[in-house]
Amino acid sequence: MKLYNTLTKRVEEFKPVNEGKVGIYMCGMTVQDRPHLGHIRSFIVGDVLRRYLEYTGFEVDYVQNFTDIDDKIIARMHNENIDWRDVGWKYTEEYLRAAEKLNIKKATHFPRATQFIQEIIELIEELIAKGFAYVTPSGNVYFEVSKFTEYGKLSGKKLDELREGARVEPDPEKKNPFDFALWKSMKEGEPYWYSPWGKGRPGWHIECSAMSTHFLGQPFDIHMGGQDLIFPHHEDEIAQAEAARGKKFVNYWVHIGFMQIKGEKMSKSTGLFFAIEDILKEYDPNTVRLFILQKHYRTPMDYSEEFLKNTEEAWKKLNEVMKRAKKENEDKSLNSDLVKAFEEAMEDDLNTPKAIGQIFSYIKNNPEDAFTPAFLLKVLGFYSTEKESSDLLNKVMDVIINVRAKLRKDKQFEYSDMIRNELASIGISLKDGKDGTTWNF
Image (cartoon, rainbow, N blue to C red):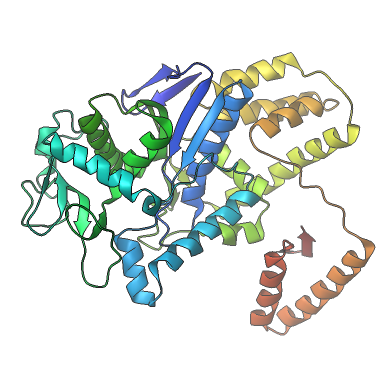
C-alpha cells in the first residue's frame, strides 16, 4: 500500500514498524462544541484506512483522543455557567452517537487529556531536564523552539518566516514569541491539577505526544488529522516527542483536506458548520459516508445540498445491490477482476473515488452479480439499511404524515418541525418533497 506522507511530501510505500501490526493515532475533537461534517470527514477517512488495513490482514491498534480541557472549553464553562466536565461529556456523547450511526468502528482506545496528566507531567520533566523547556516565574512551562533545530520539518515553515504577522500566545516571560505552552499556570476560576511547577493544566500540543506514545510507542506507524492541524499542532507534537526521546516520532503523517462551505473552511470557531446529528436527521448515514468518500481524502471538499441529494440517489442503487446480496444468501465466489481493480485503487493512496467508481461500473455491466460489489462496499464501511415495518406502524405513520401535512398547510411550522424532530430522535426520518412526505428508519 502507498500513502502520501506529509513529512516527506511524497507518496511512499507503507512499511509498518512491527510486521503484521499497525498503530494509528487520529487527532480527535476538542469537545467544546458539536461535532460537524468537517470532523466526520476525517473520522470516516480514518475508519476506511483502518478497515482496509484489516481487510489486507493487519492487526490495527487505533487510538482517537478527546481534548477535554482547553481554553475554549473553559470559556464555554464561564459563558454558560456549567461545569467544564459537563461541556466535554455533552459533545463527546454526541460524537459517539453519530459515529455509531455512521458505522465508524470504535477506536481501540479513546483517551481523554485529563486521564493522562501524570504522563504529560513526566514528558514535560524530560524536556526540562534535557534543556528543551523552561519554567517561567509565574509557573508556565514553555518549549523553547530555537533549541529544536528541525522545527518546521513537517509544515515547511521556518521561524524567520513566521516572525512578521504571526499570531502567537502573548506572554512577556517567553524567551521567544514562538515558544509554546507545555503547562499553563492556573488562573482564578479555572480547573487545575497539581504539578512540580504549581497548580495548572496542560497545553494543547503536549497531550497528543504523551497519549499517542503511551499506547503506540515511539516511533509508531501513522498519525492522522485534518490539514489545519499540520501547523502548529502536529509540528509541535514532533518537536516535543523527538526532543524528549531522541528518536523519530511518527513514520507516516496522513492529513485530510478541509470540508468547506462556499470556499471557506467548516469550523467551530467561526460558527460556519453543519452539525452531523442535524444532517443525519435528513440523510441516511450511508449517504453521508458515500458523499465523503466520493472525493479523494486530500482534496478540499465543498458542502453542497445538491451534491448530497444526488449522493442519496446513488446510495439507493448501492443499497439495492446490498439488499439483493443479503437475500440471495448463497455461497458465491468473488469476481477477481473487480477485487483487483478495487485493491489497486485503495492501495494508491486510498483512492476511494476510483474504488467506488469501479464498483458502480461493475454493477452497471454485471447486474447479475450482487455478491462481489456488496462484499467490497462492506470493506468501505457501508451496510444495508433494509428494515421491515409492520402494518400497524405503516398506518400510524400515515396518520402522523397527514396531521403534519395539515399543520404545514396552516403554516404551523413550529409543530410540524417538532413532529419531525421527535421522530428523528427515535430513528425515524421524514423527507419532504414535491410529491409529498416519505419516511424511513
